[in-house]
Length: 171
Image 1 (cartoon, rainbow, N blue to C red):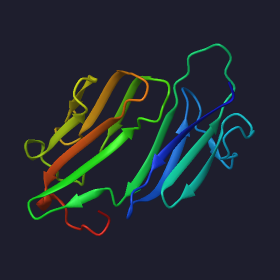
Image 2: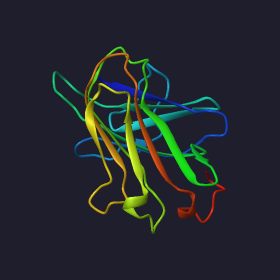
Image 3: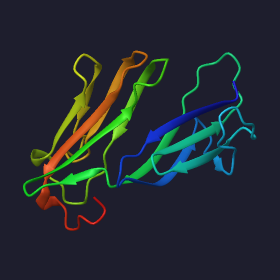
Image 4: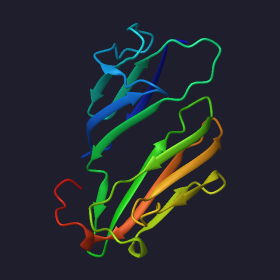
């Protein structure tokens, strides 16, 4: 095995700003090929950014072994701001995958000063094994989903009072 990829759908008004890829020991370098089936040195990744999709392709060298990769990215425009609450609802795993996932972890980073009792976090859909949490500080919403079957989406939803945001221009 020499590569893997992730398509990150972008809805109208959403922007993809930052990406990093790593494995158990190495932070991958940008500049790799972003074409599926393309070739680049192990430890590199490429990004193909379209208005409707961001595709990250990373290159590795694996032989009959289990591997874990971490893909970190930032999105702008995902948040919906209303008078009373701010709603963040995002599919962290799409239903297009023909293979399942042992574990999916998603975290939402809130502005400084967020208060745990005002934050709600949900995982969707019903029936997926997993848990949601506000983290040790009570203000770091997260989701862990386990044994996700093929063709099954996973979504995180976080609701906070709109008063937590001092600036909604990036929402």
